Length: 118
Figure 1 (cartoon, rainbow, N blue to C red):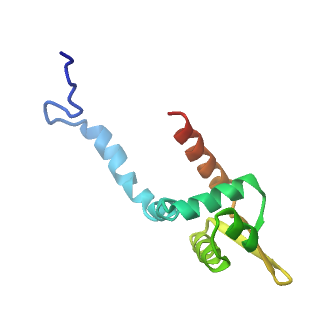
Figure 2 (cartoon, rainbow, N blue to C red; figure 1 turned 180 degrees about the horizontal axis):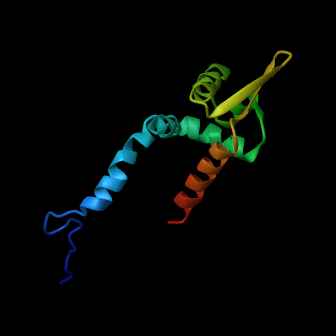
Figure 3 (tube, rainbow, N blue to C red; figure 1 turned 45 degrees about the vertical axis):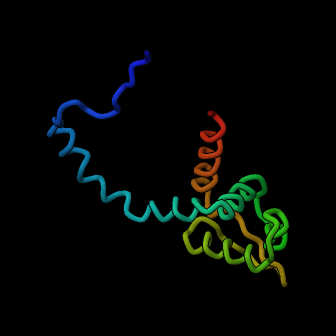
C-alpha cells in the first residue's frame, strides 16, 4: 500500500527573522494581480500570445486569428491597452496593436514554456 504524504507541517512553527524580512515586501504585489487577471481570460491570452508571434497586428487580423468580430477583438485589445500590456498606433483607418514592452513578451513566453513542460 502506497503511503500518502501530507503537504502540510505537522507542527506550527516559523522563522521569525525570515518572516520579518519577507512580510513587509508583500505590498509589492499590489497591482500585479491585475496583469494576471487580464491574462487569465483565454481570449486576451490568445491575443497576447499572437502578439508575441508577430511584432504588431491590425485589429482586423486579431479578429480573424481569434475567430471573433472586430468589436470583440477591439474590446479585448482595449482592455489589454488599459492594463498597460499593449499599445496601439493608427495608420489611416487601421489600428495596429503590439505588446507594451519586452516584459509582457517575456511573461507570456515564460507562461507558454512552463505550460508545455508538463
